[in-house]
Length: 297
Image 1 (spheres, rainbow, N blue to C red):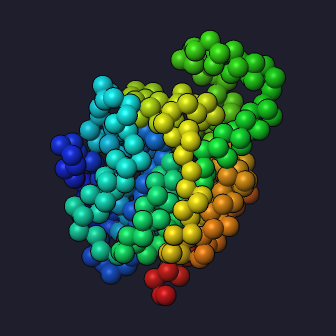
Image 2 (image 1 turned 135 degrees about the horizontal axis):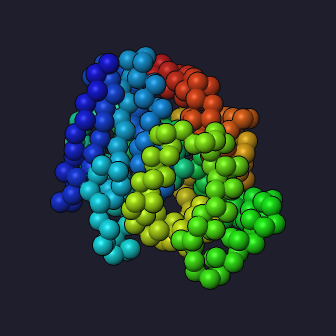
Image 3 (image 1 turned 60 degrees about the vertical axis):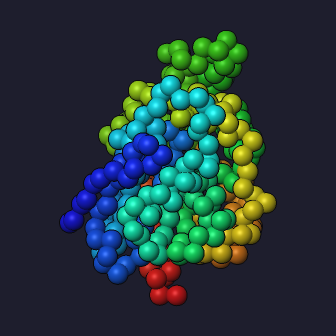
């Protein structure tokens, strides 16, 4: 299968991308936006499976992450939603993509919603995977799930957050209990997922600036983010994906279902935050079927 890698120049920096398949095959290409903010494409690599049907699949590492330009000394104010929206638009233009579908996972789905509410004319389908519609809902869900953890794990999290020692081994061990329940239930984590977590550890600049030290201790610039009031502006067919044990609980996803006019929602019963890893074949089949339906409209 054809695979092309390269870089798109962006604001004096470089965005790494990979295209699996032929962008000119006549099928609607799929652009995949990873989560974080601050992750890499590795953990969503499985979506390249969709290229087997002749559909091109575009992965990229967002600025500050993976193979794209890193900026560890950047002012935290540099990292904004608008920056990553501009980067996505720049990549689409660089690759000369016509009509396209966009899949965003976790933060990538938040970015995808922000992209879609602006009604770009060539966007024809949207997949929002494991994404909250607001950070207030996300934080409330995380706190509820946190209260279900063993008491000693909760105590370790509380202690280190109060002591500002979230870089300690004890805090890391406590967070891993939460992650094994609500982020990826395949344990040990598959290599592609482990690579993404290792990349965040190596350079947590973006994650810390926009999110915070962990999934449930959100103190970064996204802490007050919401797209709920703008969701009726999304006019393209939309697929929602989440897992039964997802940190993106049904309550965090519900506004998408309530306010997007053309929407369907699949909850994967054996998954948490990564159905594309935890129930890979079923997840790929769901996305493939959705995209095929969009192509015949």
